[in-house]
Image (spheres, rainbow, N blue to C red):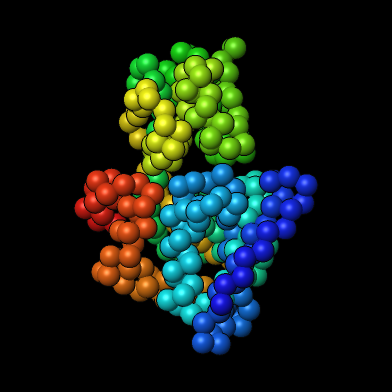
Length: 264
């Protein structure tokens, strides 16, 4: 049984999407539903207010089904996702990069995707943040580790343009108002394609080796068992081709095959 409920609280920033999946009377962790937190504006990975659920959204729907978990999907602005999930005894976060700063703050349930950050540009390739900042304004998602990193090294009149939606950054790059965009390579390529932008993107060298996970609050009981269940279900999805079908629907056949050939 699936129930989708959108509760509008003013504008999109307070939108909540609730989807509950129940199978065969099976209960979630502690017999309560898992609260799955989805950051808005996170396509192609996840976005609870978009027409499509995204890579992580569709994956989590499938994992909830295969592990017989009851799941409630809650869509919030990314800045609120971590604070609310960390204090939730049933909190799950989708598309969370595993970084040293976050390592001790979550239970890392499932390693899903490599998500290296790169500098995306149009006229020239940038391999370092310093080179990009010297050339002009650089766009980045507000409230992120990447934004802090850029602000920490900028000097003089160098500008860091913080945005609340990756689409804004893509538009700034296309219009020439920034010279570079600090973003995950897959997201940049996906949004550029969705915008039907004609200019070819230039991607610099990876500036991180981040991998994105499904993670749980430290307060979630039975998280280790849940991780084993998810890992087994994800392996089944690899074997039966369902994971490749999800990847292909967002990234195209060639890109999905290339990613899977790298071992994930």
